[in-house]
Image 1 (cartoon, rainbow, N blue to C red):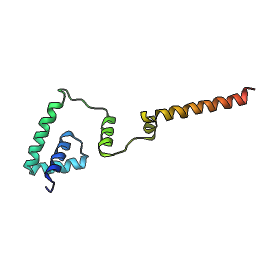
Image 2 (tube, rainbow, N blue to C red):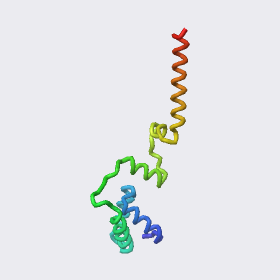
Image 3 (cartoon, rainbow, N blue to C red):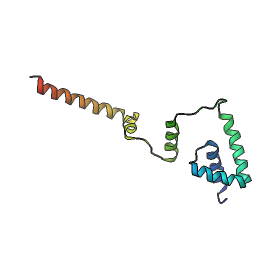
Length: 114
């Protein structure tokens, strides 16, 4: 197979969790057909992960998997709006919003307030 034992062990766990991209998943599935060590690793991980799973399958919202991949693998798939509305930017958004409101009020007062 050409993989180091530790790499194969980790990749098998990723395969069992469904974290691989589709092309990588298909390639790994082909390798599983011929490699008994990988099959044993997969059985081990499936047994471990099955114990952690609820009895009724739960499908997480799509943004959860996107955020997980971004956090684990550095895939930044957030939009500008998501970046702006992120909690870490809340103070900036409030400050900019307040400044805009103050500017609008000042312009209205200058135009009509006299």
